Amino acid sequence: MTRPTLRYPVLVEPLSPEDGGGFLATVPDLPGCMSDGESPEEALRSVQDAILEWIDEAKRLGHDVPKPSRKAA
Image 1 (cartoon, rainbow, N blue to C red):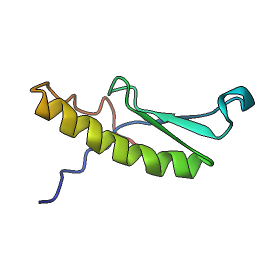
Image 2: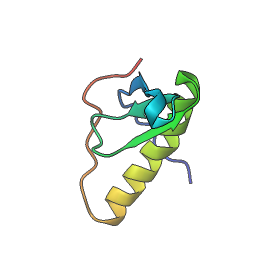
Image 3: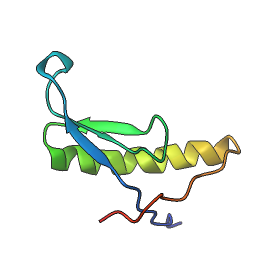
């Protein structure tokens, strides 16, 4: 079964050395949905799996899945 492609805006920010360095990717439309990586590109790739898992869990719990607030590039 193929999953629908939903494009959510993602915010990628550097993590401080105290937090282990690297980059954090968060999805403002999906509370608590985030991932990290050594580079911005790695964080962005990782967060795509987190988005799919977030959506699957929301559906499993019977929660609504918000539509993307704006089109991501």
